[in-house]
Length: 544
Image (tube, rainbow, N blue to C red; front, side, top):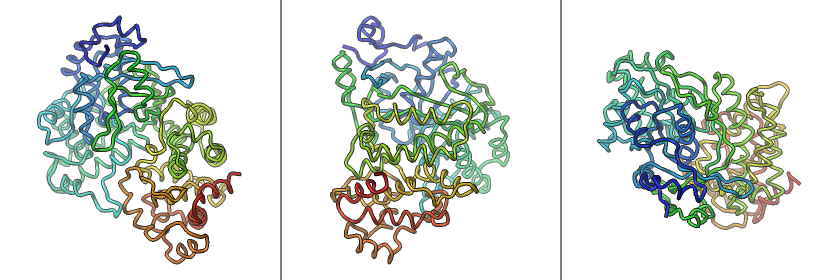
């Protein structure tokens, strides 16, 4: 019987018999060194961290190129720490699902410590502040999703927690960005110690988003006399503090029942899958695809670990920006969002199954090859056409990746502007391209608006994935329902219900009417509301 505990790992022969690779270093020694001289803190302890980032450091530890691990911090879904880290000695089992159905399994043991990033958890918060006072700390990284950097409501007003933090200062911060500002202040007070704050989230200019959010809070602290003005200068001195940009790419879906069963058959017992109160699906194991990419701007004022030995690509900001735009705005994320929206509407539960649908398969090809690639600048370190081909021909169709459109549809309002708005803006700014000629990107945006009604293509009530803007967006569509073409068109024309969504630059980064796409999207939306099976009929019309 194999379980995730440091005691169980001592029986190396038993793990080898079922082809599970163990860490190639002594855990207790690594943990002790990390506690004394921490180098890396990571915020966001979910599956992408456990299944990708933590494994990178394990590679360095195995190679003898690092002697410290990562300190994982969770500030949003604290159940992850209490139920998936502490009971399992901070270990997890990474399972790579290959397209041929084989599984590659290894125990990841590079996480030296797991903390809850909440000042109300006094001991954890004190420990975290001590870590940030250590001269050895080189990097604080993040996988907190796009919404983690947002300080404002849909109305444009600051969130209540942010306003409270701005008034009260760094002592007991509530919002994660305020916590980061507070920890940076600790580092400043400890002798202006250098550090890199590295966002690894799937959003455009992620380092800039992180910087701007932290700076907005610190500026208010300075204005309110709560911190020294020199602290703001410290944050903006790249010789002391940096906010590198990055691009990350690896699919780490919800835990798979198929993988769970395979592990149990091999004698591994820690396979319980849970859904936390924050709607995180997680297990002691992480299942993931094999392909992975991480490109980071090489700007680390306190030095860094040699992650290039684990496959990370370090480059300059301009190159990272090109790679990020290639992936997030063209070659992967837009395709995922398109499949998420229409997959939910059409009743699919697996991305791989959607790729067998001739309309949806053709849709992602059109978005990628025809509408996306014309605005991609080749970053030089990755070829866009090759990357896109791998996504469409190998990654998305992988039948062993249990990724659901319902998962991808989470927080779409926070993603859609990046995944489609950037391409629309590129068309809008170039003389040789006209956004009015776009067909498939506006079709997806119309599909998203249709998705927001919470009614599938059969006319049945459909659960919607979590999204911080879900209720405000749905309120704009109140009174809209399936009906005849003429009736729906009259309602939409009279109420102009989509304008509050499509003209909102905070969603798309551009007013879609000014880009010449508003009326087109309204037309597609109207067609999808004509009655039952109208979504499928609309896809058939435009995709053959």
